[in-house]
Length: 363
Image (tube, rainbow, N blue to C red):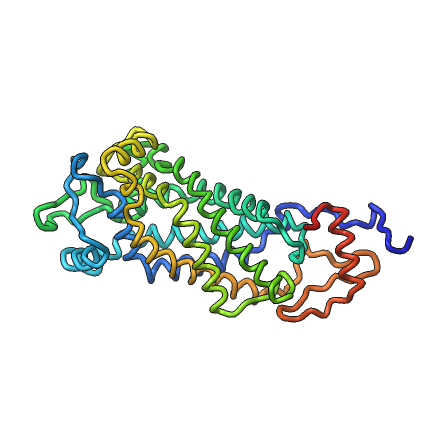
């Protein structure tokens, strides 16, 4: 039968490493670095709000802030512009490395699931799996950087008084490398991985965000009757990125409070449950959402910048052939569809649908 495909003609499964595309890493690094340099002050304010406990549990005096604007003005007044950018070095390193690795791993897992064909539509479950796997891999590499970033953000200038409440850092860090070395010397390897467990819970944040982002793009393309790999305009990318981030942030934010408090050099918790129990007991549900306002003000434009840069950089290289991209299936040539066009032949569509059914990839 002419329309029947033999197993020998089916494309072989691509390897996981075959899906590695370094432009995804470069795009993630670029977006992470640029967004961090612009928005770091909001990130610093978020961290300081996160670790501020209820008055009944305070053993270490901290500066008192009455909202985001007051925090910004107080830090600028007492610590200057340098104070607003305290911890920016590990944050730049961490954001650049995290986004670069995350997009690299995510695109690799996604390509593997698609068997090298970006016209294959993945389910929401598979998008979630790819994002979760990428998140775990990224966290293993970057957790020490986030420990350094948190501690440097919570390092208040020696001799600086913020009204009646003042706190002096017991250990002074002269930079990211100095922080990592001193943390390792005083707390060992576990010190560099404080907050790792709640960070694993945070993997769900990235999974929800990427699943939502991909599903929004997929539904929008279906609505417009466009191919799955069609590009969007700037406003559409920004809208999808903002919606996906706000949904993920609202659902998973408490883990960030727990992680920040575990990494705080001014406190010594025995573990995740002690943080959760004490926060709930003395501060209630509100305590688990401290810093949410500056967080949303920070991450919403942050993710818009990251995704906009990422999508534009990756689409610049979309016509470059990749070794995992199938060159031919039998006598029918597989062509990459240009964004916005739908000139694929009916015979080719039918042929690819047949292949997807045989590989269990059809929706």
